[in-house]
Image (tube, rainbow, N blue to C red; front, side, top):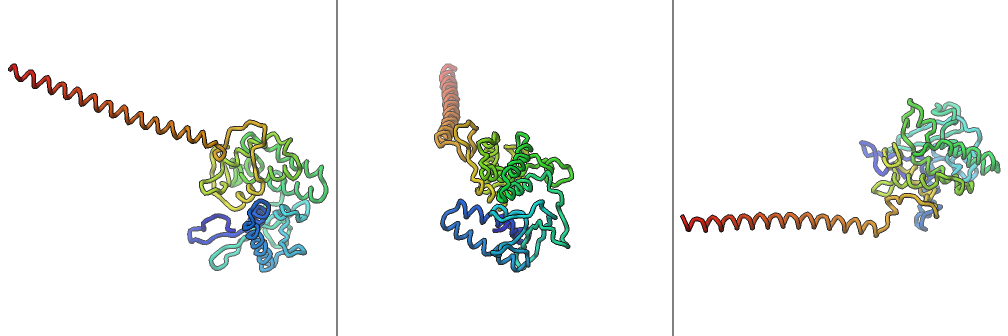
Length: 299
């Protein structure tokens, strides 16, 4: 699946192996039978590209990228190593991948993962699957502490030199909810409902989820595969027995119907007032004309 539903200025689409790991996981976990069949096809393509690109692989052929595959339960090495990104141009499309295994010769984009909420959450999952529950929960709570009433204010958000400065990332909210469920921490997560509500305010008209926002009501950015897939995977829902303002997707039909009726009544009232005004003016004009004709008889 391509990063976005449209290509660049030349119509060329970009496919990220890492994003498709999330797409595979989301369709496999929450999709229909047809979706799960599509997920299997995506997995096969990921394995095929890993072989073509000569990437390190696990025993089943899945690429060993050292980061995002932990979503599927694959073990990743801790601490994470050099994070590098690569895009290959092929006829008609581009293929990209990010890898965090310290491969010699690759330029590091990120070396210090402290302060990056998503990286900390991936490490939390890695600790969980390695059997280190206390360490996993500790890492998870590091990210919870980054919440600032609107979103996760981690290093990219607070660093003026980072492209994501003052831009909350929607996918980090989804990842937080996903890890909370894996750790059975949802009941202790006081920001659960606020996080869910914010996520659904980022839903675009086509159903996808927008990447970033300035505050909980102001989406910015674009719809992409990574963000949308992580939201589907997290399956965020308002927790029962807790009051939260309804999201756009949860407004009851009765409220929508009442609003529509009020609009219709208002429009009809406006039209009726205009008609009455016209009739009143017409009657005044008729009376003035009749008075004028009566007066002319006595002249």
